[in-house]
Length: 424
Image 1 (cartoon, rainbow, N blue to C red):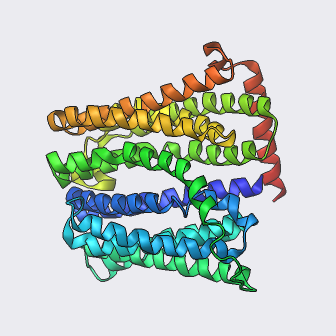
Image 2: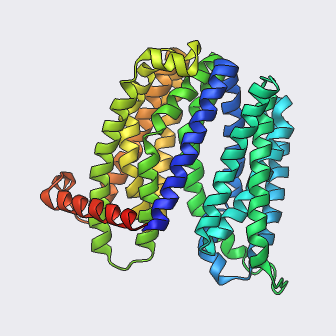
């Protein structure tokens, strides 16, 4: 239980640091700068998603079953190859400004190698080391960014890029420090034995993740194309403020996925998933109401004058944000019971809605069109997930209503958490 709480706490700290970085960039770079930074980090994330066809969650399952180098060497080689392929892809496309191309590719490679170390540590059940590597990345980036902006007064997008280099490099070195002792003694026996399973297990899961990422962020590219980086910056902040509601649902889904994967009690998994859906829906509802209720003057004070009035965009996003928070435990249930393809189908449906609605609404209505597109997409994904969950488990819509058993289980869980924390 404490490892779960520590991991959730790590995610909360990372989200808080990410919010502080967003606040600093908003005040120092303005909306256009935030928009440019959003495109840079999004392109890095896309490269990373393709890289995770091999260096992804499937590694956690394979690491105990192979020698260390049988996992890490293919991970390193694939990361380098993927970065090279994306360099030429970006060279021949206009996905990102050419002046940022080299930095984006180098940063993506550095983060890919760092993530390989982190996932390896997680597969070896070195949870504290795993959490430490993730925290180092965010904390070092924040410290370097503050030093460059406020110490050296270098308020440019290049300073932000340098802070990414610092954070990613620190995480890579920290991961290498923890991984190296596990590698010894080094053996090169059947060094490429794990490659077939790395691709076969990672493909379906990563197709789902990649499609979902495009579902999340296609609107960024459309806003930049039709409205420019200033309006993109406002939308990036609106999205990040709204998505802060997902911290709890994503943490719960991560724990739930591990529990279901290691359990043969399907009925218990169904009951727990139902409860998570109910309570996460309510938590997201309360959370988004709180976020949307923050006065415009607060956003103006924290983010700068360019970001006043983003509550309207948050409100337009809110139905989809709430729906996807409730969909997170459903996705974890499908993954934990071997129905990963259902997640992929749901992501594809949402992405289809994003494409159709995005090209129709964003050129006409700007941020409002983007927010409406995002909500329609998330609602579609949730609708498919809840339909399949009810159907495959022979449940009724009435089973989604909160009952006395749910309240009793919630009280029991809260007491257990308080008791465990009190003994620490």
